[in-house]
Amino acid sequence: MKARLYTKYVNDVVPALKAKHNYSNVHQIPRIEKIVVNMGISASLEKGAIEDAAKDLTSITGRKPAISKSRHAIANFKLRENQPIGCRVTLRADAMYEFFDRLVAVTLPRIRDFRGLSPRKFDGRGNYTFGISDQSIFPEIELEKVKRQQGMDVTIVTSAPTDAQALDLLKHMGFPFAEK
Image (cartoon, one colour):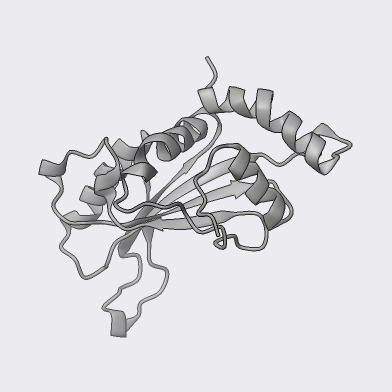
């Protein structure tokens, strides 16, 4: 069974975008290609910090994260080569749509004083990146087991060639943007 948001995309969003932008080909219509969730961890924290972040990211996304390691040694940051500095998960297909649905419907409204995300965080190529300052807004996280507050970056990669088309796609998908 396909994800609820995927059926919404096929039945509602595709015809609306095709009518608005006059696409001549179905493959020109923008779509969400992947969602990347990244947690950066300070290299100076204790050794269990990476494992705790990976465990939290696993419970949030349902996928095992890949551990990111440093490429160069930088003495001023107390960073050595091949030292673990973060973890990331790339979601595609059904897992991506399920995560996007939970993010929009459950997680983002749990942020205190939430009035929407800024529509100015596009990168110029149709990709949207925003930060979450605390992992405890996700309902999958058990608050008793959280040892430290950990933020994360979420990047939504679309096939849209411009930011305006990507903004249109995300608005039709129900993404909560702040009004000007």
